[in-house]
Picture (cartoon, rainbow, N blue to C red):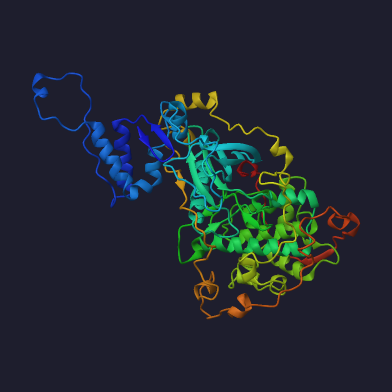
Length: 572
């Protein structure tokens, strides 16, 4: 029996379980491991002589002392130890202290008359392990191949979160398990950063059937939903979205994270109208290394419309430049209303990406045209943002440099043209009604998965059905800080000016070109009068105004055949 601030735990653990835990702690925490005491097996036969021997401590006393020492050390904060104390077996039970108080009728003060603290000062209480019962399920916000994203309210703090529930039985193969664990690891590494344009993970936990990620909730839905409604965006709106995405990608790449799935569906809109990058289910986190040219991979994954040529050519290694191709595709789509190489099938789309010219409609913004053409350069070595100047090639481009100040972008001091209209905290009118109409029921392990789990031998069981496939998945973020995000790298520090290649030529950009305080350029929209977009004719795409006969850049044609593998199974 265990308890924390919120719950009572009744857990069934055998001596072998403690030995396995001790072995794992010895492997991962050799310096902090608490030695496991010698536990004795219960023998029903007791001799008369044994009754007169000095009484030794029972297993329960030894285990209680052992667990207490673990909790008071570094081990107590590890995900391995938290998972060990989570409900794993059918016999395990978790009951909240609130329920206990209700059952025994020992309320000191009725909860109905208790004053609720203001949200600004309310601290989120942390338990050893969250459970799904700690959250009120409200509405489905989205659905993918692996599970659902549900708007939930935490019972203790009354805060709203986006809960991503992933069904374990879906992740059968070892690669699928690796992708799910990679997403959790990336989110955990980013949670302490508090970056303004990256999603924040608050906690992660699991039960027998599902994995759960508790993420910050952003009330404006995503850019895909907004594009469905308005087809395309005003010029200044596109510029601000692109600038904030650039800063998000810059931070990901600085932490050795290749996004690989930048698309409108994964760009959330916060309540203040600014963007947040989310969903790292297909991302790759490289080991930290001074030479980022070692950060290369060949995995064929992503969403067809936004795949870079080097990913389509599966024999080619690729790196961070693939994210800049996706950015160029997204910016083109936001400004024109269609992706640059749209086609009816993925195969036709891949063929167009590899061989077709990049075309723009007449009277297109020349600065935006030059930026997009640089981002959609087929040769990744010549792509804008992948050269000697790195991301600063993007930040100093005329499309950004002539119109905005990067410090203002980072501080979110530029008023967005579009701010989601809401009438209440739980107003979900910005989200796709098809998702909102779905059941919030979280899929449990079906009979087929249970039969599979029972039939497979331990050594040959599919990775996702193994009992310990997701050991160490649990996570709890540090207590929220009332301070704004500050990057580890100063805007003017020498480290911030580093590049992806060796600085043999001692070439640097002047800080004044990047972060100097410049004159604020007037926006096309007045924040006082344009809080929300309206579906006027100017916002709709007119077929008559398009003339795809302007060949801006005939990039290098890569001669290769496209394999028939479909990436739809990797869409999250």
